[in-house]
Length: 85
Image (cartoon, rainbow, N blue to C red; front, top):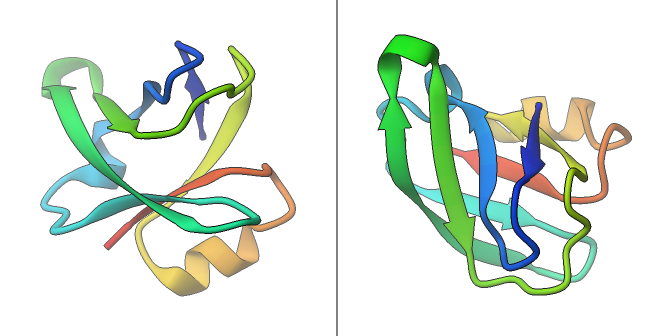
């Protein structure tokens, strides 16, 4: 899991989820939004992705997944998800 730390698309999640990713995006009920990892702190297992999305709820949770089938399994956990593949 991850969570929003700003209302303009910055999230905190685990580094091991995004490690070696070739693409990062947010999957919302409306669309897929490209994102990028702007900072990684391996020692603390943290990653800071950002996407061009506005008006998110601060502290709102985000399910994280490395593969599409993992994302489908966690679809009921959060309204916005980080998909890393």
